[in-house]
Image (cartoon, rainbow, N blue to C red; front, side, top):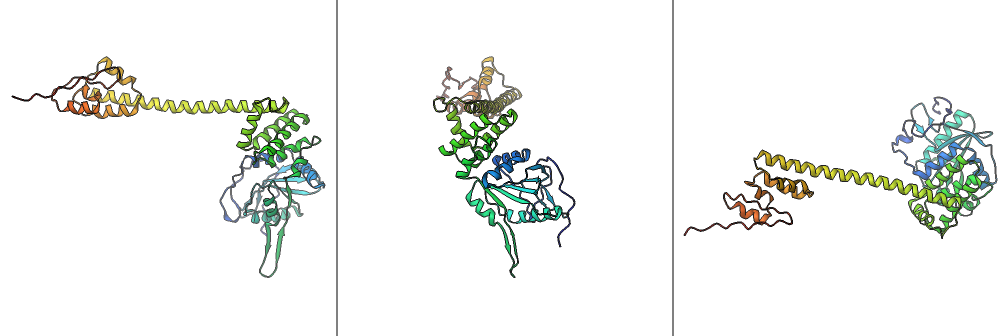
Length: 375
């Protein structure tokens, strides 16, 4: 008997962190998708028509343009939640569940059928499950992941419609007539950084700059393209953008330069702050040791000359300050505090010797007097 459902899908533009994190099959592992995964979800959520365009371009078939994104949490009354990457409503098709798959995830074998069962129960109609991936291996797995067979021969199968973005299909997405699909082409090579992948990314940005006439949309797509790329690809593009002899001056190349200049300033600012914090901590630590040394000397009644105080305030070596503090706790004179180890050992054997023997450069250490033998 199917469990009951607590209500219809709620219409919303909700962030993926709003719902509680209960997962299927008592698993409490949270999915941690990377930036390329999230960028594509946000693009499809904000512009559902992109999915229809992508589907039509890759399959030659069409379906009603999705009108809105809905809450992608599918609930049972027993607090089990299944959270597809994206849930859309389409004119004529009803619900459309979208999954962005960068890798094989065996949990989807259970969560996909569960989500579909609940949606069919709620909506009283079958919808569509679309998996988008750039991996042939993942595409092959997705088509057969949710297939089950009982001991007596009962079969249960869910076969999603897989959109594989690889090879010539990626090239097909670089179409001046459909510049909005350039984001998918860049996403398809987001994990690569070779010359072929770089060419695709550059072309995707060029199409975005030259053929998307809506300025806010153009800027948003260009930022999304740059956001999905790997660090290795970004490094490759940085090298390309900073050498005008390698790439013609275009709007896309100017965007490259502006992006990397801004990124460089941000990284420099962050590094400066980090260095400043480290230097501040070191300075504070040294000042604390200097103050501790002066406090010990004062408590022991060892008076300082102006020159000796200046030596302490000028010292920036924590280890040296530590040695002076340790000596100050037992020294009979200031000469023992500042003396080098061999000299200090000799001084301690001379009762009443209070001559100062500093260790600092530019000042000579007097030779300690040797005890005279009684004749």
